[in-house]
Image 1: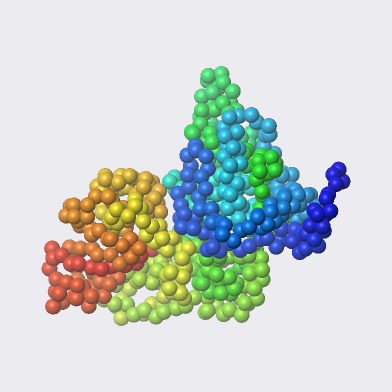
Image 2: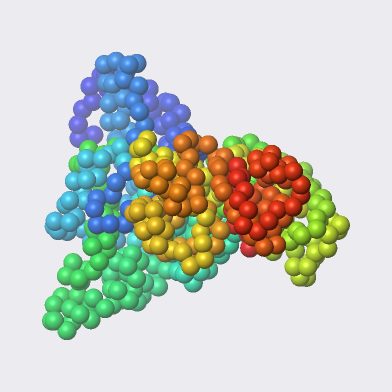
Length: 572
């Protein structure tokens, strides 16, 4: 050895070498992703895609300083130093040496934008720790797929730039998942998107699509990875036009000389800075999380659609952990048309496989027998049971939307209540919309989208920022709005003026999901139809409005108390 250890450190080293941590490399440090590692911001967030430095998307964990003494601090420091020693050792089971070995992007770049990114990451090492904790289960798989295609292994770090490895990330540009696919690009790359499932958030499928897309971009730009990365961010057409412009002006056509969007000009330097940090963590005082060079999950197969709460029970994990490994599933169950696979932590996969072998075909879902009432449609029934019209028709062998009162339908239903599926799409939306915005003086207003309305027109109506309006509702401004869709608006205007001008009611308690609205009776309305539409009871309509008979008149105003979390659009 080129240096001598003190007796004190030699003793520590011998103890650590003999411990399970050293013997198994990083295996003992890998933990399942559960709700404890998620915050509201990491569940439903608008990822910043400006040219500013990457901001931490979750709050740093609080330190318990009251119980921390000098000896404990010293012990942590010494362990961190030891960890840095052994995770940089080629003989260990850490993933970092293998990742570094595949780096292919240019080095020793002395550009001011790269230096500013390096400075930011060096100052925010806690951000890197949070990102790596989220990335931990997926790095091995992404590295494997990158190596199969002989791609630069720096691409394993790209989801940090794209989404901070947040599986539920959603940007103002409608991009979703850790690789941030927009809907159209996702469909072109084979990522299915429907009411049940969004392949852009599928860790397994989206990684395949993203890396295949990278292969094509690299060919398009003749092996120039800097240009390929720029095209991944801003589109190949944007980069090609910038190249043509420079050629006309007799200017260089490398990445650093192209006139590209601000976001793209910061995008590539961020990745290069991450590469430098991983290559030289000690130089930048960054302690890398010890991540195993071993699978972080196993893909298991199911024979058909399965309730996610049941799947979690079979795997003996909590349902939030299941969603974090399988963020593509929007609802309480997997997509009836597939994929019929789940990603599970390694130990949980073995348990699931054993338990699943004893599960009968009829027990994958809970079923209810529904008697069709007069006036009901498949849309009404699908909304009531939180399923899709397409699936209702499939399981009941219906060839059209025509149904008869008095007949029965078999309906697949969730085995748990709505709150149990806290990371499903409706519950994430509920969490986002319930978050207080604009301080305690703000008034929450529930707005029902009218024909022809847009984010712009609604924002003007309530005098709020259009981008904030979209964010309050977990959307992007380019997302389409549907008639009857419920939006939450936080306004600082007085409640009286709002209530007088618009047919809405302010709510003083934003955490309550029960809201008061006024409804104007239309031609053809009945108490039964109104009750069905707003998921309330006819008897309650009588009580709230002192209606004695069963008849109502067009133009009559009714007061209703509705649960806003139940007022969703009919699934399709």
